[in-house]
Length: 440
Image 1 (tube, one colour):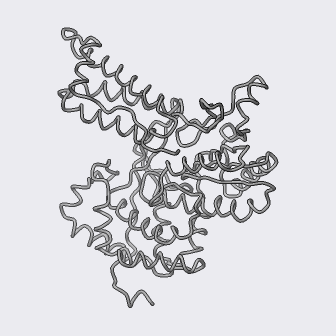
Image 2 (cartoon, helix red, strand yellow):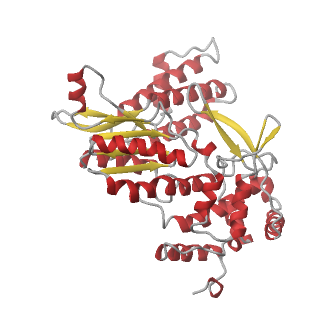
Image 3 (cartoon, one colour):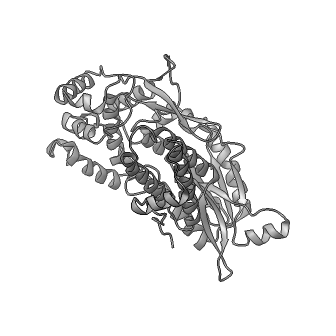
């Protein structure tokens, strides 16, 4: 049934678009931009984070909402006349590790609304195309689902080798030309493609200067994760499923979360072939694998015994902030376990220490105590996975030491002994470590 015969409400149309995309994998959608109507944009506005940092326009969520009807009507008018052009993103940097910082773009509030709308339209179509090996930024899927899949694959399938891969500067090096070609496989609406192209070319402001973007996706906005998933769906997921798997002598598996992925193989010869094929594949699309962070390791249940016989440490691999390793149970057999990676642990401790240093004198303790409890719960929510209970306890202990130290430094007259501090915690307890995500 043509869309014109249906209820012309975008929220009602999106499930119908999804259904048609599922039933007709080769269908090209020719009319999508009209879905960005005023009511849908209003819905996208209310779906934005209300306390997020502003872009270069300095307009907050609350300020835009004061004249919401007028602002949305004006935005829609410019979009229909093709006069709407995204503003450059405000470039900020957040810590990536001890030595590097990750660039982040902050779009203007209006651009966030349009990006969210486009992202939801693309999601309705591409969720039907994406493969099960992909977990990043998808509804009903999370990084913990990816971790559990890795656990089940290594424990239950004949996996003996792991390819640990890292795409060097992925979000900053995505080819606009290739990305638009991939979008045209499913989308033939020139108006929607024009909007996406303008977002890709909007550039960013850093240190008061405008920088044009000839490659890369606008990382930090609502659209970037969806575009990244579409790009890697064609570059990696489909290629691995259709081209690589049939050629391998043994079993091979791929698990991807955004631009982080692992490949697990049964045979060493397959692992060597895949690693080289990966380098050639990404080179074709103007991407490179990090030479130091991409490697193939042996990772069977016999790895601890092989390492002891060869006089080396057992191999481990990093994925989504966890170090994966073989753990020997009391019964004497080996099972896959994981702990918070050293880099992530140090980063979390540094961030907590800096926050405690800044907040201790801003207001009374009871006013930020609940925030501290929330931060601890957030840490447990992510890192509380099977096998990581020890590192959760170590993190809480370190936080308690830092907390005791900074409370004592507020005044030299009222020093807290550890015993007094412990008594205070009994009256005003903080969350205890616990496993949130059980894989076994």
